[in-house]
Length: 212
Length: 259
Image (cartoon, rainbow over all chains, first blue to last red):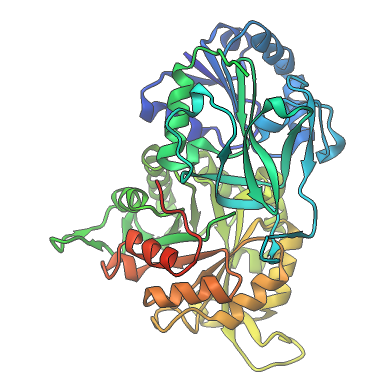
């Protein structure tokens, strides 16, 4: 069973639909026992960091996530779930989970493209990912594949060793990060068509091992 | 770098699309879920559903459509038409839509934008704007006015001022429909799109007037639009989305062309 963490943060239905389509049993839950008893965890999220952290703490999920991480359970963070695993966020000056060392930053404004066009914030739409490390969860992903992003903040791990892929939007930012049994992406694999489903499928069979 | 999005729009009435796709066999398919899946597989970047069901008691039919679409397609989609309250928004989003769009309801009560953004996040809230070109005046200094009821009612609201206000209230995106260009197949209104998109910092979807790929190229190249909405040129099989994307790509527009 795959646990999709429910802490009121946004649309969980699409993650659930994608897993159902792929044939992996899942449950959307904030039950601590159910999460710790699950085989693997998806940690999604849409919304603001401050509120998300407050909701996680209120439900006791911050500790459960930490425990799950420490015992080696495969964890996939999505969007906000790829941000609040770091130490802190510029959004609401939130103190976050600190599973990976680093912080979450707001896109600089104004932001310009290489052709000197003004870029809008949020970064919304389809963009590619430059994979700089190999990872089992990203097996079969091609350079031409694009993924759906919607965000104004982005994760900045303290060390490059945590950066698995980057994306270009005025600046080059880490769009896939990972450490041990935790992998997290700023885009929405559940909304990124076939390549996104491929990532979810890979995650659902990943053994949680990652050699940096 | 971000790709320009190509977004087919489906009008839905009582759970059926009003314009079916003409497949090669010339069969109309009126099921919005089937059409959405067809466009998803063809490479659409997003899908817009516009509910034109007249009676409010049949709204649950649309919710059922949304639920079934969410089970079948794995790209973002939005639902507009008849969204009047936070509860309407909640029902559509919980059924699996990524975004909701408000148009007339926001004109009547702009606070619905901020309330929706507060409850669900700005990324969920699309401000739909129907716009007509008018004489420059003190009331409409941009020369464009917001209209409602399919263009029959002028609101006295300046289009540019409204776009900025929508952004300030928390809209995450604007879907900008030119009533003058809509249905003409003579091309998007580039001046209007450029004016609005150049003056807000949220994405703008250009809508109204697509008759061929050249029109799409022009609006994406010259108007700062982030996305182009299309309807009849794909519903009637003039082009496939793949053809549109291949052509745009070959003419230097960045589009997503692997899926």
